[in-house]
Length: 293
Image (cartoon, rainbow, N blue to C red):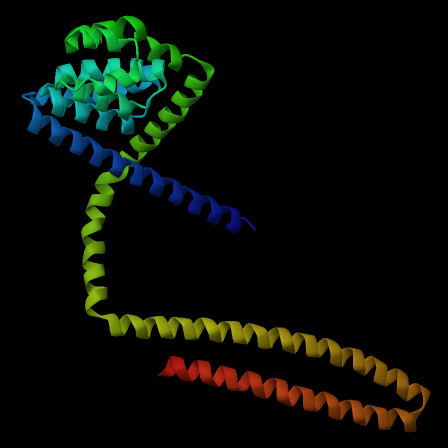
């Protein structure tokens, strides 16, 4: 009885660890992608790049924003400004603007990226109060100072609400899952080459794989057939036992009539059994002939 819950527990654990490993692999890929953008678009040192993930983690907790959102946003800003440090500053401000205006982070960072390069149209759409300032020729820095005054701290305030705290809890649980999966990545990395070799072997031995599949399927069908036959035999035994009791009762009542009825019933039972087991024999013969082949 303990085997079933134990098997379920092991299956659940395997599924959870598999999900955690998958999440860790995706997170590692996202980190690598951002690192590549930073190296190609800025003059950031190895130390700055290594410290960037700590910055992402800290900002994620403070603003209740998943790192999956923060990394692409930062990549956009670094590409536009050519600076990791300035990109980080703009990202923090973009979170405030997003929380204050209700626009998603991607929309805000795209607007900031274009505004930095002279196209203020996106910023006008984010905050209509900027239109006169921009029309008067305000620089990007002036506009950002104005936005800092009107939206500063909005991301932190939003993160401290009940909804923000629940969102942050969900994000941090996801990060915990990724950390668990990260511990398993070396194991996965060691195993993957063997699976790749096995996949290549499957491609080169398709015919053999199909034969194995056929044999396995035939064996499974044979087991099901045998199971059906055993159940049928048990049912027939029950019927025969019932008829035996009835036979004994009838013999005690009227021997002549009983013998005639019993012979008729017995012939009917034999006929049914003959056809039933003949069909089963054909099925079993066919299945095991396939396995033999």
